[in-house]
Image 1 (cartoon, rainbow, N blue to C red):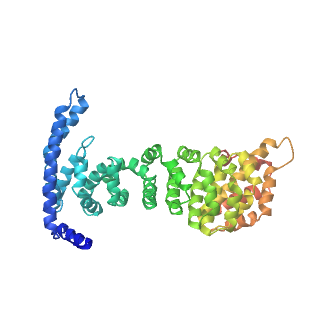
Image 2 (cartoon, rainbow, N blue to C red; image 1 turned 30 degrees about the horizontal axis):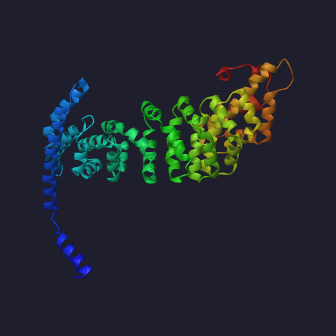
Image 3 (cartoon, rainbow, N blue to C red; image 1 turned 90 degrees about the vertical axis):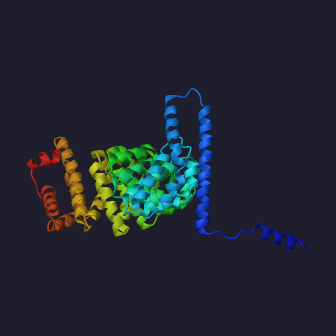
Length: 451
């Protein structure tokens, strides 16, 4: 007999007739029962060997002992998940959930091996049955919080993208069962699979657009350094979800803003604004505008990182949507600045930029633009009052002249006929107060100046 014939004969001996799906299902069912019995015997043997238990250990053993009878019914629960009766499915899911809440769960591998993951994922997708969705979320969250190997099974089954979609669920209870997933998601930001990382980044962008206390928990767990490290990888697909996260975080208050500044976000933002595509530049400018709405010290960090010439150039030459974000950035910067910082802004051409802002056709931007112009002029008006008896220099007049030379007066005059009351009233006030002839009494501090 030749070698080929020998191999052929062996193949024939090894060949088995293809089994039917029903036969396969029955085989798995009997295997599960056998495994359950062996697990029970093993656990009982271990229980007998344990001595001098702590109270906590004793409680865990009581839970495990109570669950031993239920784990033997796992094959039945798995079978009932396929039932068309929703109530039967729900009861089985609840029993499986009870098996998964045991500390240091000894049944977790057995439950994973029972082939229920695919059915749980199907329940997650069914928004018409929130009770089943809730229980399935509970089960998968507990499995995902197991060992790295057990978490990997969840990844391989494709459960993570489906779980992430649930962060947009209208049901608060589902969101709160998902919260234990946060540490797992933070770990997933460090895996090598770009698609998983991208999905997780988008999930955090949704999570960071909600309750401040919840966002605080996520930030405290170390989200910001991980996101900024990912920006440094230059993976362009990650930029927009990460910038959304950082923009939402920095929009909350100065403390959150300071966290992302201390993570060295400003140099990376600068690079992104200079080199990236327009939609990414727009997101980066939005983050920067939120930073500039913070404290004067945070504005100083922006100035020190050399953003002013970049913003000035973008406002003159870039696309309209990017110009809008730059307008918000510059007006926020003026609003948050001290007198000394405003002097710095003037030295770096802020008057020209304010005139560019007043050329926009967005009423909200025109309003904040006029408010920024007024703040600059009011700051110098107050300084003129202080210096009035010492010299004849009129700082306010000097700044007014610069606005006139840059075309600002024409723009303000034009805005006096604007349709929006807030805009034309501001333009009227600025024109009368700073650009028309006035006497010394008009320098008196008003409530507006004090405010």
